[in-house]
Image (cartoon, rainbow, N blue to C red; front, side, top):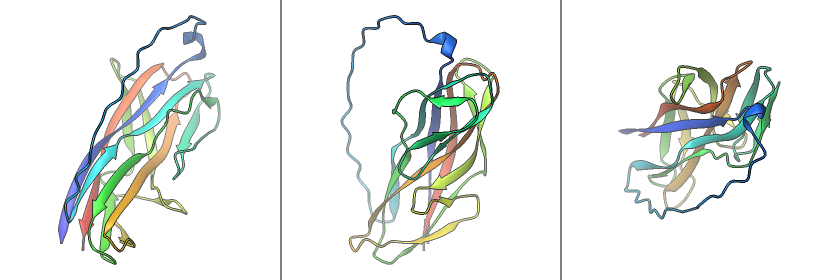
Length: 180
């Protein structure tokens, strides 16, 4: 039995309508190059969970990301752009090997950078079809790829408060994977 844990960040950028003046902006863009090496009985994080940019009209609501990274919102929350992404991990075991996956808490607090304001991510899903709620109780999966490699995503639901302060909110959670 091998037990491994990885931490990742959950990020959301909240923009209030009043904070969106109609000014032109010049921007530079760059990209990174990376490679992931996954050794037997390990897993690595490819990318962090990012809910993207949202706006609120002052009414509480939610932002939920599905297994494919699509966003749905409720209440006074609206998605501004399509920059959201699920957290993604890669693992390597053997064909038909069982794997337990769990997280360290059932809800997480995201805190505004440079402030004390918070939002709660209260439901976390492993990106499968249908999506499966993942909690502190390990969920059992079987590696279906004959080569032993597998990928999984982590998504969730974010609670946005009424009159949520604008800014970038960050939090961290730990995913634990146990090869049986």
